[in-house]
Image 1 (cartoon, rainbow, N blue to C red):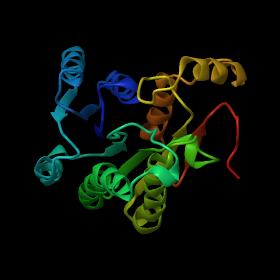
Image 2 (cartoon, rainbow, N blue to C red; image 1 turned 90 degrees about the horizontal axis):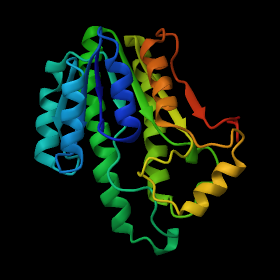
Image 3 (spheres, one colour; image 1 turned 120 degrees about the horizontal axis):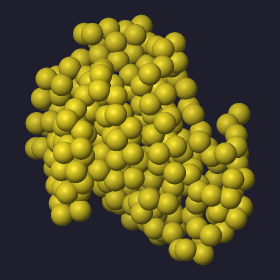
Length: 243
């Protein structure tokens, strides 16, 4: 299958690209931000796996995003994994956040995800087949950490967008599923080492979630029957459960 994953050069994104690319029947396209951190990682992945294609894309660059969406039909996609996130999850208390910060983050994260998903749906509808996998966060399930107002709001929007896709496109044999992972110590979220140690001590398994474990869940949805649709899969060692 032809798979597009947004944000594929670090953390969960990289673990997912590596896992999916080990199956030679897949071709994995992944986006990355072209800078000194992510450019070498993109090169490493494309050198290690001949069935991968790295695409430089800055979600905050309107022209680049429009060009990418216009060309997306040439990928003949079967699967879209919405994983990229611009910025960091932590901010400050809700009442201290300027309203413009919410707008900027929405424009940098939710709008690009919507536009890429719409472009992918155009291909999926013609093929009468497609899979959308959205990386959300376990923070939408319960009370989020302090300072997560913008991040959780963005993720909750994408989660509900997935419900809309279930309602409108299931008849086209298109699925949309969500993965809600617990905190992973990947560098994406900067926590004090003492907080990380405390999280490990209180965790049922006494260790934090690894990106490779969440990548396995992505692979499950890639491989699953089209009967598997509208699922919201928490990965949190049953620390709390969705009702």
